[in-house]
View 1 (tube, rainbow, N blue to C red):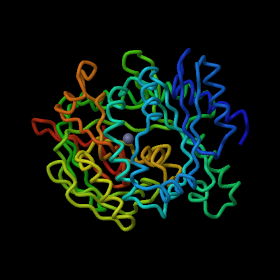
View 2 (tube, rainbow, N blue to C red):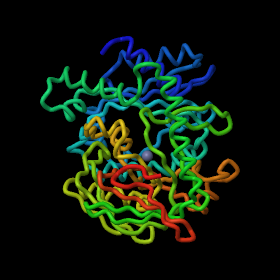
View 3 (tube, protein in one colour):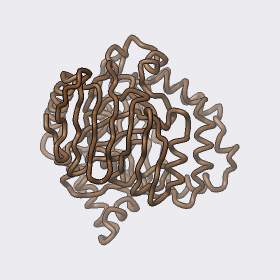
View 4 (cartoon, rainbow, N blue to C red):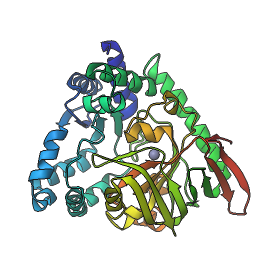
Length: 408
Ligand code: ZN
């Protein structure tokens, strides 16, 4: 890939994505796949005045060895070093960039139950720090091609060609060519218009139907608002874009109000394994039944991670006719696939989707219907024939999606 285009991409991520400010600390989490690109991002951070940039490299085959050889007790430990690192994040409001290049099923052959149990054991130690940081720091998820990931999408190409093709896809979906900063400003303005339109409707609930078997109603939060694109870090008012790319408008639904069945339309990569052709049934907001053609046990595991894992945390709307979906590519990666399809997320909701959240504690947000959980996992349900009808509290029905695309 041309150096100049990658340089523009790195600038976009650090300027529009993280919006790193003078004196800030940054952590970059990444694989070993694109070290030169990681270096370009580090340099951009420093050019913008970052005080300290720390790169946390990982390599899936090594992660796999840890999961396989270490005992549950060892994997569950929350060490003094980790505690000190979290304390520093809270003190410095460290920016976090995640450059995803993971193999979508690179952890096949690991014990999912062991990994889940270790995460469950560690969560009570991590939660207070995460609550403390919520909405206050800039973070961004973007992607770079990994060899295994690229070959998963393009099995017929050589490894080098597959990686090059995936670079093209990533740069196209991320609006890197031309003037990316301007493109993102326009894109954010369009998403904001869409949100305003939905927020003015004040829907009480959304009803989804598709020929694939989706027949589902989700209750929206009376104080909830739809958001999309960039957002402001609480306290500092720094505008940043948490996802590059991003096409969604989303809100946090009302905990306890979801009925019926949703059928997935894309595979889900979770804990390094693919859950495929699955469905989920809700009663009173809670998952009561699931089924999957592959990795059904993992899906069952996921919805029982904690009490909130069986409740919804996100409702996101994306037209079937969207730039990412129009590439026709199945990415096997949530950052891309979630932005190509209407989706829901199980687990933690978004407190900043509540009006007045700035003056509310986390407990108050939970009482107002925002779900709390250690997980937040998006899964895709949009289809070409999907209809979504918005229903207001006084029973007025408004078509929101017709044949997979926006109707308002
Ligand atoms: Zn989403």
